[in-house]
Image: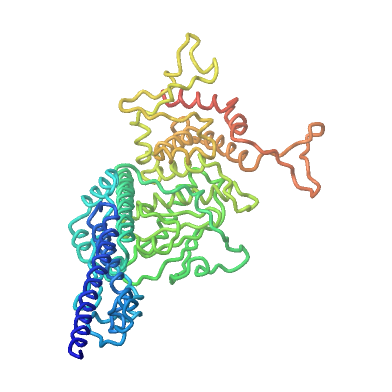
Length: 559
């Protein structure tokens, strides 16, 4: 009997072992089928990146299902049904089955974060779970055709030196590339797009720089081909004016330069102390010669001493003088009574010409601003026209210089769209305004209507149209007609011009119509009646209006 009993127990143990193995295989099959169902539920991948993601998710689900199931031990090896049907089996010795070591809960709960530009994939090997990171290539957004065209144009404009410089990345560019490499794929695509947009901006900047460079070249070509005209003196408006009753300190207005003072008959001269080289000799004689040129034509306008600042060279002139231009030789500050020049040995004649021009601005301002208001009071057309005329006289006396040569040779004409002013301006037989023009060969240069030209904004408008030299030539021609209409220098012509300028600057004393005596104000000063340019022209030259003045000019110019 004991032998039979032992046989029964041994058979029961074998049955339990077979049932346990069958149950394990069924559980594994169930788990695999569940994993298969999860993986097939995912949509079809549209790219390699989606395929990698789906593979990672499938592996994660399967691994989690296996890890979540507790490892079978000796206590759990027996199925519940067998244990219930045979209580005696619980006391039987357990037969161990192949077991998978349990994974700690901390390892199953934690999911490693993806590094920048990588994709994490779990992998089970040797009973342990590991994470494998795979690099993912970012997807760049393509540029639009217009942006690609601009970028290509920018690259073509680069010189060989710029390309070589761009080929070597700077430290900043390396840091930017490292920072972009740490971004996810979507952020890297945005960064690449931003980089391409910066290239578009670079293309726009290159086009702007090219336009500016072409503009500068055109200005230089115009200045080299034509006459170098200094800026209008009315633009030089200093903020401070030296007090008349205090000793003048040149360093207070032009610091950073060591000035050596000297005097001539009509000028206070301040010369920059030279650091090297030899200065021109007899510069004060050049200034006095220009003074005599003005004295021959406008002696009634000249008054007071003038300060002159002489820089040692052109570089110092441009470095220390805020309003200096590269093509100018001198500048005038009419409200200060100052002229600024620079020394250029061997060119005293050119210095005399430009100095005469600027000295005219000083004297006309002092004449028109009797009350020392500090504002530019001289009409622009009269101020610049007179300065150009007297500058031209400094070339070769009465014969004049390049402006007089232009007056003889240029085909300047009245605007054909403009009509004559009055019936008396043209012939009784219906001759048109074309007869009131100069008759010379060459391309015509049309003058502005005199009424528009005498407005204060006409010079700025001409500069905006690129007609600066034409504007100065018209001003020169008009003042030449007023100061010297007969082609000579008779006293009567200067007397008319003196009356014109005096009426425009001071007006005319008002007399009491009943008594004929001069009228006085409450302070006992003589009352003056102001005169406009048109009214002064009528009083000095007997022109009824500006249009009659214009007709008289064209009759004179076409003689």
